[in-house]
Image (cartoon, rainbow, N blue to C red; front, top):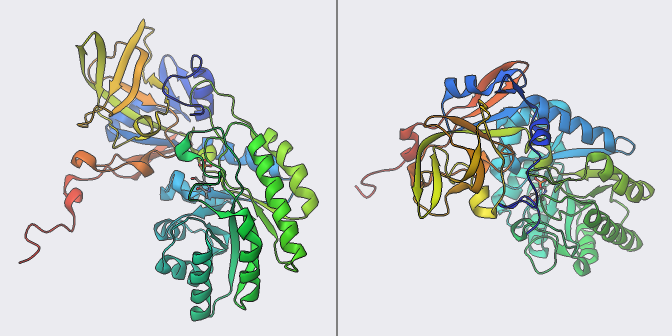
Length: 437
Ligand SMILES: Cc1ncc(COP(=O)(O)O)c(C=O)c1O
């Protein structure tokens, strides 16, 4: 199941987690980039997502500097956090974007990403989505099957547009992570199997409007060591050599996907320097531009979910604290059994005891933490759930007719709402009570 699970191997390294997030304690109060999080909670209420712009910049700069020795592009994986303010921040840093849907294409356009800096992956792109991307002049379309390639070829002919194509390969590499986010092993739905890549390359090369410019992979998410990247890259480079031997010399990009892990508890994820030290010596001799598609690494630690204690209770010998954020707001604990550290906004040096932190949703699986040593939280007391910047809001739903929380951006000692809390009437916008009338 990899790391970051509900019961971590050791005690969470809270100081390191706070540092990763750009959080600090001043007189017991939790501050993000000079802003007391209690002030944010007072202003916008809870639950609420809060993102630290400076932490995103720090993570981007570290990766960019580590990759600087070779030509590279950091294509931010929009699926991790598609908020327009976060996207604009990354665009301004020079990032490209990795998208998986027309919706994400629209978000990148709204945030001002030039289309040629965008890479489109995904196993199930529809004809409409491919057409939109082709017409937009997208950077690369990473095809994931022979049938998708046939459709793309037809769309290129129909539109007359030149299309830069990548082949997303399934390199059959085992990644030590949760099975739901392991994506580079054979027998799962992602990527073109290695033995079909050269044939696909020939199809691309034979089409007048298609150009094979990239060979790509994505191994999975929350990877904490470099071994799988090296194994995958060796396989991709072998395929680039085979494609070149077949007389196709247009490949300029090696796209190694995302997946760089972060600390959720006590892990020691690879840092950008270790990643670069493992990857660059393999890629440099091939003379290719390196693309990476990190999502979680850039934004995961930079976000917190603020939530308030509603009620405390005891049942069956256990203690519970019911909070106002549920699995609809942050699904990772329920869905992946992911561990998220929970810290008080105002620390008071109280003794801790195990408690289940549960949400208001009508599911027993609705929890943020189980048997977590926490101080006895008072009613209305607020806490921050750390590591909530990636796969947090984007996976939120309206289950139990709960409006999705606001998203707040903190920068330069100030904060502003980047997306407001949903209104109750938005929950049924467009619905008709008597649609047949
Ligand atoms: C094709 C692709 N690229 C990049 C990512 C980003 O992964 P991560 O957020 O772990 O970096 C994903 C995640 O699923 C993906 O499917």
